[in-house]
Image 1 (tube, each protein chain N blue to C red):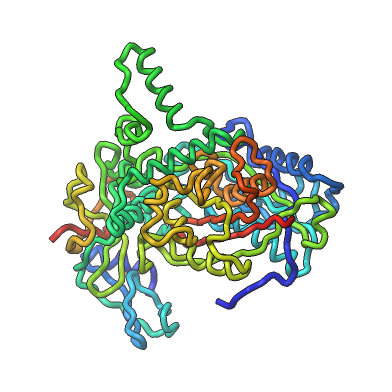
Image 2 (image 1 turned 135 degrees about the vertical axis):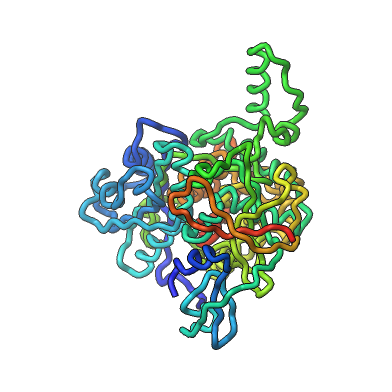
Length: 421
Length: 133
């Protein structure tokens, strides 16, 4: 693959996000409109709808979740954007990250100056078994799914390889969960606003209320180690290692960078972007990481002229806790085999040297799959502009990275954003 | 050479793949086009069915097709990636391992191929499986 660079630089000039969660009353278009209205309100300066030249939508499978294909023109129409080109892009759980890249490509190519990028997934209408079945279509349904794999199962298998290779244990996974819930508790848009300690206390209180003895969990670690509180889903992963099923939408407004200041005084510049693909899990030489992430990151860093140590904070694709640990190595933040120790040592906490998933990540913020990659950039926008409120990272962060994975790593997109003073 | 050949071979208890007649790359399942040298000159090969466990999980929340076959939270199953002695790896159910103690299942353990039919399976397919040897 050749080294790439934008022919025209691209900036993010506004963001919007619906609340993430389970919303039986709302369809994907309602969620999208909610996110779009927030974007419209957030743009600091003048913004007219007719300035938007094209719309790219990240959506994995409205066909399966809502029996609605061809979603992009419907959403464009719903916010008054017809007849601009409206395109849905699909890359499983990386659909949102790809949509950002496709929108940026349209600008870089000179086809558009202003692009709306959206992501949406409405997942909770289906029963959980049906959701599992729908998500499974992101894997190889000819050979992997018939073998008996599920998505937790794929990541569990990677976890088994990781644990054997590097001597990690489930305590490191628990720390990722505890951290991401702590961050999610400070994110009003997150699906879960409770820390693990709060969830544990609530369960104790419920037991006492029912006249049962209070469970003897000493701390969050012992709570997460108790299979009655945290049942096994796919060994070595348990319930609290898994991101939830979520409804939600997020949007960004991208412009050609010279026009960015027409919309806001504090744009973020898309300084690096990389994308890579791969075969099924059994095709890979290593099972303890995601090779496509290594490739995508390499390209994004080269394009940005940056090194991993220059990234101030990152939103990574923690669909399962092990995925965050692998990402922290694939992105070069820690040496291979050291990511689990970094998680145990608190290095990836909000106040640590390498903050990861300050939004709560997919684990606590929620994982509406087509919107997740865009939701990551919404968090970077807030953090890099100093607007993250209680969860703001200190030290005036300037460079953020979003890492979005599709399937077991058949797709990975890495986008790097920079605020310039 | 079509996708369904893999399952037709399994019904005869054979694990097939392809081998490239130009560069020698072996693949499971079979492919017409070699992904390494890009030659369109591969032949179906029967693999020995011997390998080692490369990664695995014990699943307690099964997908619908496995639930129909009787698997569930109290009746889990093991699925994994098996590195075949010829080189390629394959996804398969792993039988006759201690499902109650996944800690005791070890990566690197030698396995041999077998097959499995699953209950209430409308396709009545024969699936690939491995067991310790």
